[in-house]
Image (cartoon, rainbow over all chains, first blue to last red; front, side, top):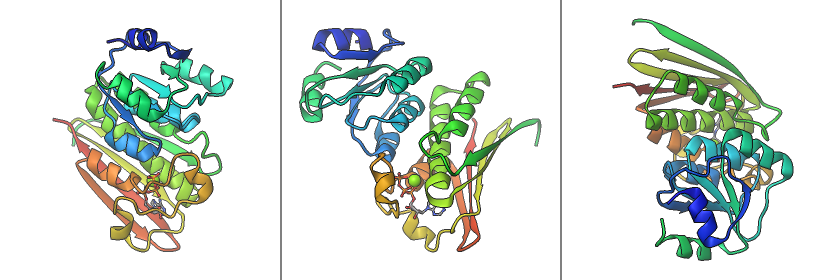
Length: 108
Length: 141
Ligand SMILES: Nc1ncnc2c1ncn2[C@@H]1O[C@H](COP(=O)(O)OP(=O)(O)OP(=O)(O)O)[C@@H](O)[C@H]1O
Ligand SMILES: [Mg+2]
């Protein structure tokens, strides 16, 4: 499923979606950046509550298909712009990381 | 040794909010050279972890990337405090990162282990009070 399809079917808020057609293959949940860099795989959706400029760097270097911010966490406007320029999809949900992983698990 | 390209980056020790500049540049360069995505991914992550370490633990440093026909060598050099016990620093979960750094998502003690995992060879040369040089090599098949 693509990032756009994922976002539409689960009703996530879209902070920015410069690459809507990117394919999502599996996911990873975590907030410690080096764990994410060591364990997440390319094309996964990354569920996290860590929302800063380093989140974007890690998303880009790890090649994840989208960042899904949990617990209603958001990204400041300047960083949304950065994400857009770097081609990083950033979605957002009020649900917990646990709930999101349970929801998305069977779908991706 | 054949032809090669060298890239040099100064890594600013003051600004670790924007750290990662050199890794992003490297990633772009590797893309232009048409390397396989997974090779680019491994190298860029290893470079980023090393770059972040120089910023948060050593007050900045320098990075040199040598791209040969058959391998890529990354050398990260700093004049920070050095690492007293390298074997301990290499252990997953070992970290001396401050609270402030941890609140940004770093300090899991996974950076050096990731650098080793994502490269074919890694060597750390460090002298306490003088600094640290990390050399990482990835072979291109
Ligand atoms: N360039 C360096 N200069 C001095 N000490 C370093 C350097 N790089 C690493 N260290 C020491 O080694 C420890 C482990 O490094 P490592 O990168 O594995 O973890 P971390 O940086 O603390 O956390 P993480 O990388 O998971 O965000 C550091 O906490 C620090 O004490
Ligand atoms: Mg580190």
